[in-house]
Image (cartoon, rainbow, N blue to C red; front, side, top):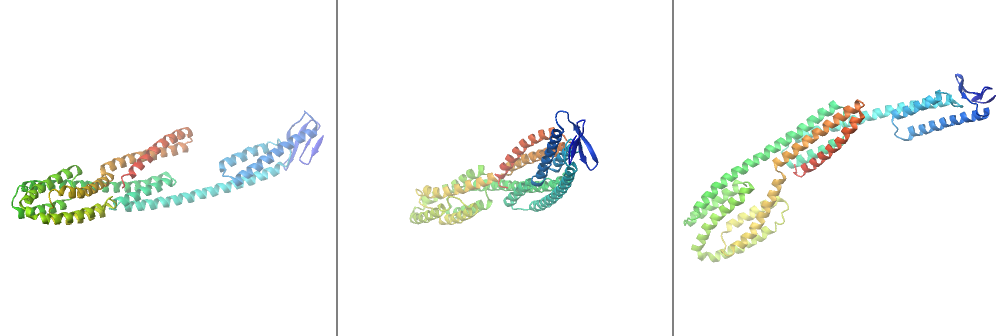
Length: 409
């Protein structure tokens, strides 16, 4: 028979370990000496000590989840309770109990942390919703549109709340964005109507200008052409596909009249020479507007130059194409800049892009809901499959949102 402070081997080869509850059978040893039996089971005890030590370190220094930590504790506890080792098993139980207490505290801390994060996310989303609802009433189409896109990016970066709260806040947020888009679409539809009105007005002005082009009543007809030009400017721009043709006809009718008048008033050549000098100076002033930077200020500056240009009168006929061509070059640059701005804010294309984005967003939200449901039901295989599908939909949504940004509103 052989023994040590924590165990013994009797004459039959049965190994015992001493515990607070009395001796417990560890196992039977027939392959060698009693000392070898005790050494073997003491090594098993040391293995448990090492295993507990490693687990204590993981709990203390890593983000091991409470669930995984408890599973590891239960696994080691089963081995300790089985009494298949010789050593101070009661001390190991105490260490395991302390670990359970530590893990419980960790679980509670994380629960409180998640609650805090959820509360912060809720307040953040509520603030986004309030701002979005205020922006929905804005007439600053570009600035408000850019801000709404920024709010959307912020929203996507926030964690989800409980499904009911998250859905309610998202509904308000999405409704605000939709309301803004509808108002903006109506605004640009109104602009389209204004352009159509301008086209009809300019059609009428062209008709009168062409009817006057053969008049020899020089003074009154020239005065009427000036009035027609003022009406033309006041009418605003028609659709691009009509504007240039109407202008060419309008200006062409004036050119016919004023060319005839110039041939009659040849004695005014000296005056027209001076006019040419003035217009060349204005053309030079207009050319300084290129390239177009600030469209609004450039348009206003060109309008002021053009008004002075129109007030000057005619120039020698052979010099007109060159000097007017310089002004037309600046005017075409302005028109191209305006067309670029119009294309960028085209409400129909913007509406289509917004509609696609909305559909993709709805699909992404639906998939996320299905994933949450599958996870809750423990159907991880379905959840993983839906996650892969979500990645594809999210990529499409990101592309659609990026395209939507190109419209500037």
